[in-house]
Image (cartoon, one colour):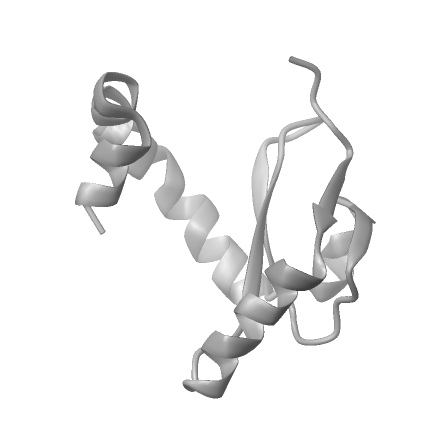
Length: 97
């Protein structure tokens, strides 16, 4: 499967994030950039509009401190949960939530 440079955010996606915001949770969109250097962008979703967004352009909404922490911890989490994800898929990962 080819790596896509864009991510589609629907009105429904963003409305769901707004529901979290009303509960005091900061609405974020997590975007995995694969090329040229794999890393996560944790984009603040407050000002995003529905539609197709270039992943790199979402860097303008990045919360750098959060992205840094996620990128530091992600390799260990991936290593720890890889077998669970492979063996039980999404259901196995949901059991960890």
